[in-house]
Image 1: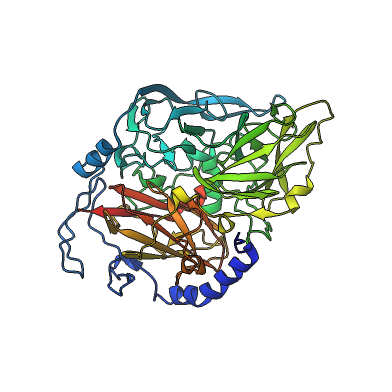
Image 2: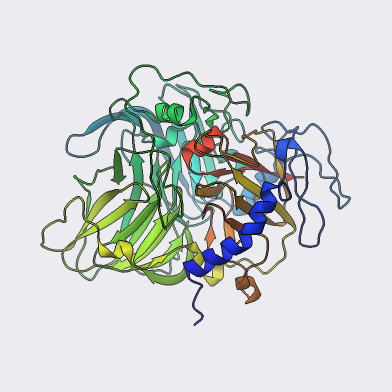
Length: 570
């Protein structure tokens, strides 16, 4: 059996390859769309097929026709409610209808031991109640907005029809206070997912919940299942809110609202938000944090608490099982600004899925999850009480939950199982399950993005250009699309693509040796970490028409501008 490359070897290759590539990006050679100009990008055959364009309003309307260098008319952008989207949904079929009513409301939440905080949540629960459906079902969920602000609902990782994707003023109108929105779509594939708003920094409140899609022909064998949701928490603690944190971080320059005109000076024209009223709590700036694992500053925000399933480490939640049980853990990082390193004391974990998609099984001691990432693992339970510890990378803090299979004394809140410092496997070290491998094919279109910004100015963006929903990076249905990310910052970024899963190829700028050995990519994912001063390439098949967000899943980075849109042409 061929041994996958080690993380050290891959990162070494990434740095070597990315060094000149990032420098080229910094000089503008690899940029697309800097300052709104259509600069193009080269496909595998040397034809310029990429670039960015303005003039299309939210909803996919275009100001005019555009001709590609290949000579065909590129036409208009596909509308989220257009016939192409409807046709793609019809091709998925429709199964039994699962009706759900969901309420977003101000809530008083107990984080354990009587620590009560005021926040916003779904159904006044933290996390929100798990939503469980079967692949092929028709989900009909109505969200009632009882919040004092507009909101929305995004199905993270689920490749739904475009007009159900939940991005205000791009795929839908924002849901106003007191209003409702009916989401309805066929659930296209199985796996571990979650849902949250795509409005402002609302996700860094209590507005999130797991979404589990069962496969009726699930091949994985296990006895029990444990859904684990990781989070970093600031809302309602000593007067802090995510909005006050954003104001402090950005010096009042935030307020993009993820596509909504609310709180900004029009679509994509950021205006300084009003300084939060009343008490806003102590400073939340993360000073001096550093993660060797991420080769980076750990994060921007010093959170007072880190949670597993809504509980602090002093009052952890417990999961009961029997010795010898095979337990499937579905682990979700719902944090706003924190990567977590996760280990189960006294156990090794077998990785079975990442971001909902099966991989060739690989055993490890620990996992690293950036914001938005998910991993499924299977463990064979020992006899006793064991800590499930999530280390907040670079922040010198942990979250804790307990696995109880027998008698024993619970570990202390500050326990650090040795497995945290053991073998750690990332997406670079995983092969996709054969059923998930992309076909071997040269990309038809390449889009290159430079990740830019710094903590001092708090001006996070792609290609130095803050988010503008008028800007589109065009793709055509049926294309193999390659996205190359060149991180010119000193910060790590978890990059998330809506509406698609991609294959992690390796460093940008060249085909990686894995392809040369006959594999098209590493694991299938929708969110991937790009470390500082390095690069990453991913590829996907353009098979889900519409307008799709591409953004950093650090909620504060995206809100000040590290977002853009991929748009299908027709």
